[in-house]
Length: 168
Length: 168
DNA sequence: CATTTCGTTCAGTATTGACTGAACGATACC
DNA sequence: GGTATCGTTCAGTCAATACTGAACGAAATG
Image (cartoon, rainbow over all chains, first blue to last red; front, side):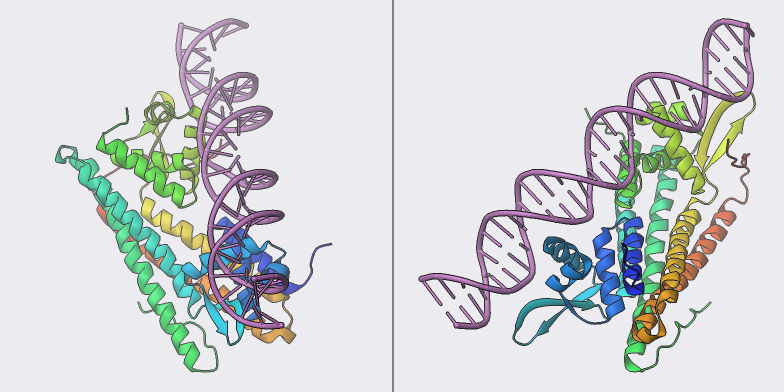
């Protein structure tokens, strides 16, 4: 018997999306749960709801935490760690992609530096790859900043407006 | 005895970058080789140079081909398949990311449609996620188009004889 | 027709990494 | 001090998949 609850369906879908993006499925499921429910969850709560071990809940929640996609919330007189959606999870997602590209740019540039001038053509092509990575990192970073701004705007007003189209 | 050739170093680095991005290491190495050498390679040539099996060379070359990052080149009176860098590999890389986001947008939207109006808040938040994916896909797509334009400018003078990719 | 030389496919292997259960240290409560 | 309840860590298991070797079909060559 498989769950027919639409929220659970969404949560599982997020797990699959995250998995196809190369991440752990459970991380996606946790994020989906926090997004859909819109309230803080304790580790034990998540583990029970998602039918996963406490260890996995802890590990993956902290993974999302390090990516800035969720945040810790404390409750007075409660020792438990509560996790909830971050303030700007989407901007952080894009930031993560940007950071990965920046790292690639750096690594490629280091490899490029070792290529002697006698191999000018190869050196140039490799340098162009590094530039591509770096420029893309810049580009994604501006998009992340834009998302961040939108999130801040949304927090102020009560009604949610669609993301304004970027200039060009 | 490890190779100290700077080109080989770059090729291995590309393999590692591709692997950390969730792809097969060999695909990255092939792309790095074609980029650095800047000339067409036959399958056997790649296999020998990279010390991989012919099967891996074939599989991964066709993976890159399907992603549009490399292209097939034919030589008169030569039955071998020669692969070389694509016309706009960087634009295609970004296109791939964009396409993945578009697919996620669609999947999330499908899940959103199943959520009843009685759970309005959850429904809204899920819809916002879908919008984020879709807008990001748009954004990345414009960046890919920009890269494509740059590549076209650079390629102005050159002419390369290419064979349209078709399945056997 | 036989042979060679391509590229692809497929079964098997090996490696990577996600996930779990159990043990542990820390902290609050009795 | 003793007990209970946290979260984290770690060794072990399991599943996914990258990669290989061998077999195969196709197409040119003799």
